[in-house]
Picture 1 (cartoon, rainbow, N blue to C red):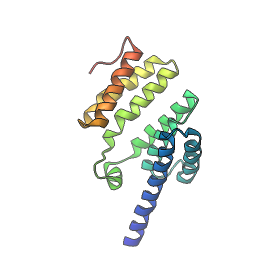
Picture 2: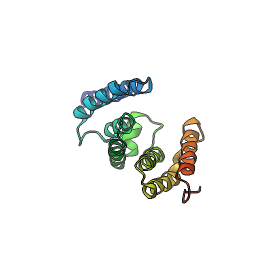
Picture 3: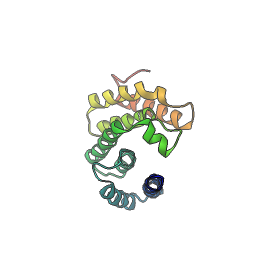
Picture 4: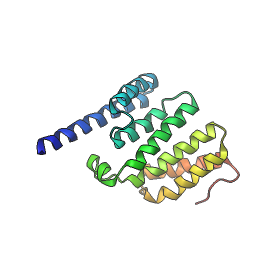
Length: 164
């Protein structure tokens, strides 16, 4: 049994490593190669696969899309997978993670998608959800970045933007 659990952890780490490698390609500017690798990984993970893998991959895959509707579809997949996550599962990947910390970024991305699709009310709805979840973020570079991005997007959406 211990060997099986160790194998599962190694397999999970291997998948997260492979996702991370595609993310590095994306961040280096090779969106096409990153998108290709994400699609291969998605086919391995499957629609019913590990929720952490699906959430992580879909979150980054969205950023490789050229069509805002496709970006929205991937961001919705990430949010759906996040709803299936537990703190125990994300903590097994990295003990500093908690599911509630995923939501500000996920909702921020969805709000940005809706802005691109000229759907300001849907954008405002996700901005409210993101703003309501920022308490889960630390006072660190990541948390500051998410809060600043929320401020910018709220200003972009204009009238009716959410206040803290």
